[in-house]
Image (tube, rainbow, N blue to C red; front, top):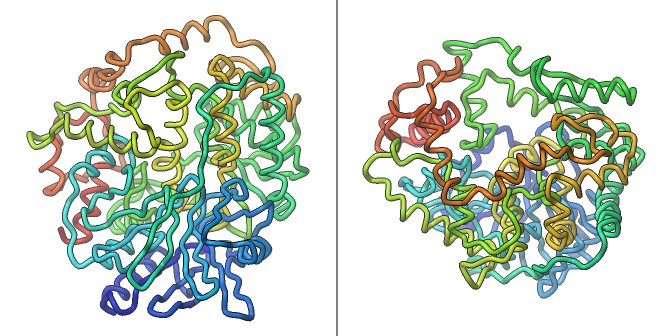
Length: 566
């Protein structure tokens, strides 16, 4: 299913519930299936473009409903729900049995539980009184009596394109702890930890053996989906590793997916994709979003409003575009197609571009979470407090007992922090439309990836070897890195990478601020005229901003705050 709503009937006003339902309707989620458990009511909404049977109830009144993409022991849809309901015990959470990013609500033996995927990617939002929970941020906000700004989260979204931990940009609206499962009791949600275990030490196995293990796990994850959807799968193809690996896996599984690429004719992604499609003889759907007509006046206002609701208020890319974003998402999801996304493939690469060794959490913030400049912030911004909050959130996500991390723990920060809060945030927006899967965000794959020695991950060598193991034909085509994935990485590329690996993290901390100072702002047509920012001017010096993406997110925040009358 798409969205869901869970609420305590005795602890929330009917008006608040109606506000949440009205918000979901504006997002396109209507005609829910109703269920209940004592004082709790649950509404399960169908996916908007390509509904699936994602609710099952047995003769005893036990039921299981899923939001997102739920795969259990290689099963999908009703089969997965039936099997999981039969197996379910509140004292046993086996993360290796699951695939996909999802939320489950299960009633069994007169007890109600809420469970999310092992990595906690499917966010669950709760309102101010902790009496309503939803897959939709906007609906949880609409069900809250009072909303006040959360400055830390405002800066996180503006600078990093998402919010981290349990925070949202409103103090009263929070996320459930992604590392917990919950029993829904008369007194509220009772958490218990997930049974997640990771080995933070490199494997002694040879590189080819690790490649073989990764390929086997990837095939194991993709084949059940291909068996269900056959050729009704859509996947992107660009010039990099992840989409090539995704296509290789789908073809290897027997599927003939519908392949698309975004970008102008002269973009490296489009050139590489067209070369592969011509050589491998499969159709390629090329879409240039820049070709969408420029809108103005009421038409543009309607497109922005559609983006705002369709993307749940605060998408990483902002809400200001001429309709291409939502249109292409809806096209991908129509007519019962499963959409594959390669997000998370960097688990097989050196994502943070750091060398072997130990690093502090502040080192990690320096090299990846310092995309800001204090010069564009108002005096109320305290850089130390901002970084301390990020530090605490990273440490909690890693479950780290010390600020000093070994290299495998640094690698874990990619799935535990980046994927959980950045990549997965967009999954909710896509899974409310139709079936949508990011196969690389998988507990078994992440466990394996953490044991792959860094030397294999550097320069993309390991992922290239996995692509070659699954499809030597696809690996042989050139990439937008300037070489094919079945040939050695050129020396000049390695030297360039090493210069980044060994650049001191303190220098990387200031890279964005220095680059921002040297820029000249080129305002895109989509942002022209979006100048009224009474709320965000309390946090940012808008006239000093030279980053159009950052400015678009700030305008998006302004739209959100204006919408809720703050």
